[in-house]
Image (cartoon, rainbow, N blue to C red; front, side, top):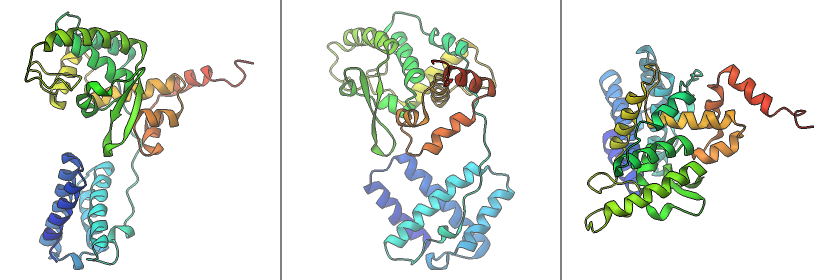
Length: 302
């Protein structure tokens, strides 16, 4: 069977499982790049002829192209999922990826915002208009809950609970984040002006918490633009990427500095593996670790 044909089956299976469009696109693109190499460099087009040594040849090529270990590992996950499907369907007996080890990724220091930069960004939208109040609440929620860009855009009015917010994360996993006092303060203000803004509007998507100027669900691209505007007004350092994910980094590192344990933080962030959360700890500077250790000194409260 041609790899190209089996890939179509695999993608259809992913669609039936209702995986995100981004995940499906990643699976498709990564495997198509592998198949192109196998065909042009090794003359392999059939699934049955695709062995682990051939795949290793492509991984070696990516390494020689100076592609990052993280990028290569993400691609390897895509290959593994494809061949796992092939084994499940009985097209092949063993997954060739079982004989290939992931590359060791270097520890990357995650540069995030300083407390002063966050304060300046929060003050970027100080007007009384609906959009200013909405933008301010969005920034507060990103910094104070660590939710992802798409999770913020997908929030619905029904997700608001007494003291918490229900988050629908990756892989359709549900978790809860607390409504902190500062979130509560600005949420009350936002809901008041939101009610006035959508009054008598019939075609507005009122079920979503954050609405665009035209009353539609806020898109991830629009949210990124809001954050970039705040970053420009706050004059954030050029070495720091102004993005929703950097807000997530700030939240994680701040929680660790304030004494939050890795397991609790992992739950709040919606990580399926503790190793993913541990990266935030590895990226903390020594002085931050020393400050945290002083606060949690075993003998400090005796």
